[in-house]
Length: 141
Ligand code: FES
Image (cartoon, rainbow, N blue to C red):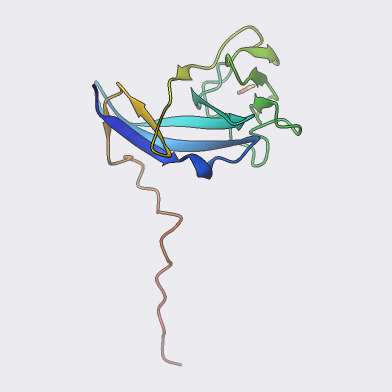
C-alpha cells in the first residue's frame, strides 16, 4: 500500500465547513504548491483541488465565501460559482457544467489522509506558520 500523507485531524473540519490546505507536490519542475480543500457535510468529508475551473485560481480568495450560507455547497468567492459537494459539479456561475478535481480521502485513526500523490514535507511557499508564536523583542527606553 502507498504511503499515507496526513492532512489534518478529522475534527479540524467542522460540520458545514470548508477548509483550505496548501500541500507540496513533486512536479516536473520540483516542489510546487498544491492547494486543496476539505469540506464536511452530514458527517462526510469531501476533498477537491482548490482550483476554480473558471479563473484557475483558488476558490477561497474572498474570506467567508468558501461555502454558501446554508453550508450545502462549495463556493468560489470571486464570481460566485457554486459546486455540488458530492461531485464537484458547478451548477451555477460562469463555469457552470465544469467540475472541481476530486481528491480521494482516506480516514485513518482519526486523521484525514491522501495517498498516491507524490508529496513533500515542505510547502515551498515560505509562508509563516500561523500557529507559531510571534517573536517578542523588549527594547530599552
Ligand atoms: S474565478 Fe471562480 S467563479 Fe470566477
